[in-house]
Image (cartoon, rainbow, N blue to C red; front, side):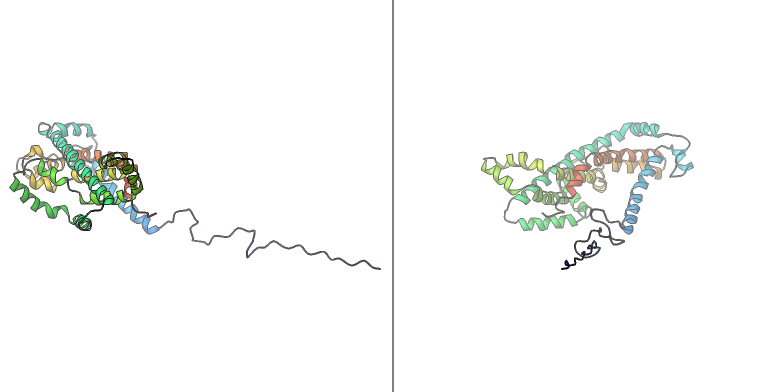
Length: 315
């Protein structure tokens, strides 16, 4: 009796395609892998052009602030002159015309502290109230704020001047400070930020614990609004620091001039008969004027960047 024949089953080859394959999936050429940022040549070119457009004037300003009046005429605008006169220019800027540059600097700081600081505080109060309280006329206020954001400040300059002239406030610091207190964009930004940053449940819990509205605002809401506050403060500070047209029509006394208007007066001296040609001091003063703003943005960038991102992602 013969034993049954047994045949060895062939080994099953590993799958190379279909479900359960062992080989890694190949990525299609030209398609970015997950987790890696996509690159756009057009976006890179546009960003580079914007950077060049922004940085080149700053480089020109820094280079020419090191030149004397003669060096400005005898050298290229994008390269240094033979003599390095930056420290002399800074000294002359602060001492020229009995040190009026220092007075203009103090005036600008006053306008920023009272105007920009007050505008930020009012924007925080208004944005918090609009975001967390319901009251009649809320939709109308929203429409008014949006409309005010779209209106340029120069369009309101003449009506503001006529109103302040009747009140007898022209040629006084209040003619610059009071209009600076109004910031529709700051109010809108704080409204958006407060809506996303402050949980309504947290406010209700504080009310249940017996906290009043003032205490809730200063101890609960205000710390959560810090990034938005810094963002609004930077925007209002830049707007007030660079304000030129409003002081131009409101102020006649040079003792109340801000830096922008004062440097413009220095620059126009060359066009008058017998006026001093001090373009080197104008350029140096302009460099000194922008340095505080650059420092503020660099030191507070982590706050204002997160503030600008408020409301961009809806959970």
